[in-house]
Image (cartoon, rainbow, N blue to C red):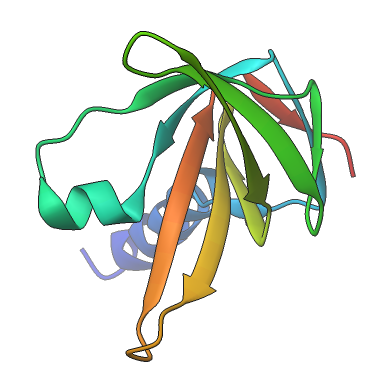
Length: 118
């Protein structure tokens, strides 16, 4: 049993690192994704994601134009990319901002497939 503990510990460490999220500066998307707005989650935790169109390439620090179908109309909006993480082929693109009350809200875009460019 004592000899198998180091092997088990090494296996668990490798498995955890293989499944860990990594940060990215630039990612390539398929051009479609799901948007989850923090304000909607606070009001309605069961709210659904909004299907959106986004650029094929997204870079941390840029403001991207997003489009989605609203109630009977097409909505054009902007999204400041404050962080990007990737796990497997799913990117989480974040817009984190502070409120007047001093709390942080994060809107998230989930894009799949997605790959890291840099």
